[in-house]
Image (cartoon, rainbow, N blue to C red; front, side):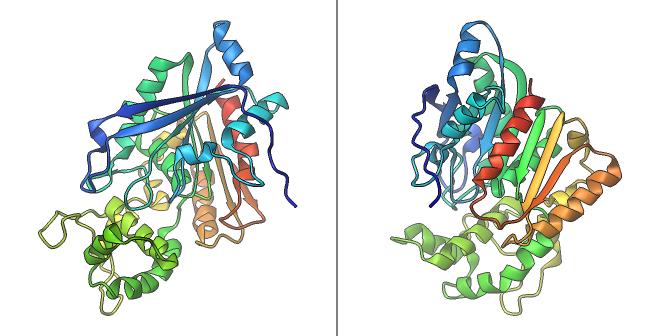
Length: 340
């Protein structure tokens, strides 16, 4: 039986909200978002004594959000509990750990700017980061960490905002879109076809009393389309969501698919590597049996990092895309050390 973390959270667990017009979107999601911040007892004392701490912003995976990571769960450890344990064990220095609510009505977030989902990349750098700097005694250094969509968001925001972030940890982040997404488009088309177009499907989900198992994957693909290839809204498609495949034959629509690929870190690194070059630390890992085939894109990405001489730490571990929170035991100390 796995261990359960019984330890109470003894440090600061702060809750506040941030309202920003950057998050206005076609979905009608709220612009005001809750932000959870955790500082372990050692960090609270350090700030009381006049010290300044580094900041780590946690970006949640798809279908999750920052506040969920602080919630109790059987046979598991919350991120605040993990933070306090790692500091108490002497494995990392305390940081200001920020866990924002980044959920959207399409089930998640890729942390890019999109008229459908909101200007999430801009929000991170122009709204959340300044708000944290104003509220807490920081040393001015900020790291990003996340898994899956959150790992993707950490990596891509470092690439697109050179100098804005100091360190990044990407756990099984979306890399290598051809291996990740193309094998799933047939399944998505079949599920969508029962409702008509992708726009019709999203409308159905928005009014459904509950979601089925296949809904989560199909909704995720629709969210990807909204993130990477948002179209102009029309009366029949007010959100502007269209899949990059022809609905009858499943043939890739080249122009649309190229818009997706422009957001693939494996393609982006060719022209947007400066943000990675400037990082004090870059951590990337992935399981060797990832259900989304992310290990293949990750390996190719690591090869490019090495060819470009970009310093990084890479680990391919035995595991899948699921149940990998224990990897934070490695990445959080790695980031904290880089943010000193």
